[in-house]
Image (cartoon, rainbow, N blue to C red; front, side, top):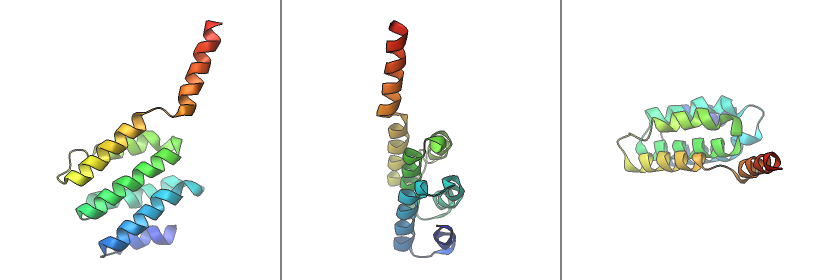
Length: 120
């Protein structure tokens, strides 16, 4: 994962970068410290072409969905992309933020169970 993160720092091929970003987004939650890769991915949001920026936004959203501790920090990063100049990047960022604002079924069940306990 570390080698791939460093690879996208200097990669000049959008197709390769988007593939690596997709992989990082899907598999970063399986490592011990997924937050380590957020900087590499977010740098692509800031520094790259629109295609790579859109892939990086999607990767960040994927990590946020699979790693609850990183949900809020990543949501803050995605908010910076909502006002971007490219519609695909803006749309993916807005979709990512909206999907992160939807409570998980576990969260809903937990709140429902708490409400039921208080009603008893």
